[in-house]
Image (cartoon, rainbow over all chains, first blue to last red; front, top):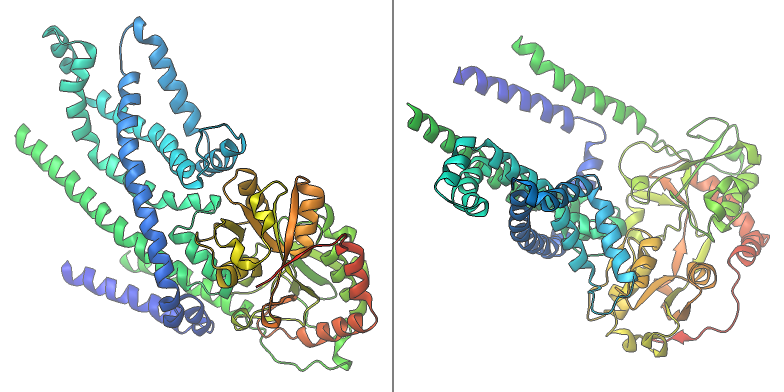
Length: 259
Length: 286
């Protein structure tokens, strides 16, 4: 088995590499996409831009995880008293998920500062990150909600029969179990956000991808994009591997418990 | 079964590369003299038709109403003048649209030449071919008329301000290399985005080529003004050239047409017609 899979991989990669390298346009593509000289020149700018991406990602993710939990909890409150809160949460999630992220960034980033309201920040960076938080909160709230709904109804009932209020039972009984169930899905949305932060470049923010674009537009050379790609991969691949590993660990534990 | 699965994707890759290789294989360097420049002799993307590309969308004063076929706007007019000079009728000119960087990506091109204010630079010339310049312009600084930046009289006065520009422009190079402001300049996809940022108060001023600056301050944002023309050395002058695929056999013939249009004053007349300026503008000295 191992032998066959190794052999098949070698043959596959070999043929693919041979096909690319023997192409007539390959020397040209190599110079335009994989030039060592251009790589050296563009790397410092892309790296410092990427650092801004990482910072935006961390700030946004912390806010998203908190805000989304509140939205999801609001949506899972039962009883007629909480109807307005539930409705508000549903409207928010529906509305925001229907708006393309890029439009959200453009509208908030250029639109709100143009209103010229005293005291409202004008910074493109501020509004770009705000748009990411608003958008991703809606998606992440749905992940949490799926988690909360996956907890067996008997848990909610037992909590209430012990005299816990709805909010208390969410906090102490439902949410801890829910979060454990959806960690892989949350991590996967981390990876998605980690790439989407680059979109704030439309507001003129000089993050990693924009730096690569600037270099490309000046020199017509694409090596900067490869540099940016490598940096994004360097962050997203470990997260993806960790997600897989964690998911498997959770599954094994469950199996161990049930057996 | 195993083999079939393997061959599927590889076959696809090979096919794609073969197609790409065939398409790009037009690098014959036919030296086109005066004799080889007849409409029938030119190696065109589409035989018998001159295929010209511009931006999507194209902006005034370069193309009016985003419709180059009406021959209005400086670049639309230049394209038709070149076509006529080469012996094409206006009906034999077709237009395609490309993004600014899309036009320079490796691979076959679907245009004979592309014009959207491409500045000729040595770095770009390694990847594509340019004609001789059809227009030379200065850079100008645009801001709201009541902005403190309007009092600047030298480049050094501009250092403390946030200045923005469109990506891939000589305007951006001028900010980064000559002005070198304390804040790294924000960079926008289009001039429209740059104007939005000015409107949003995210930048203090924008740098454009002078004709664009005239159009913006006169028509699009009347409460803005041209603060001044930015002094540049001869080497920094912004020359717009028609862009061709690298090794295009058309360059010599098109250059011949441009030389004729330069000599008989057509290019100057078109610039006068579409890019005319009014009033006195101060020069911001270095």
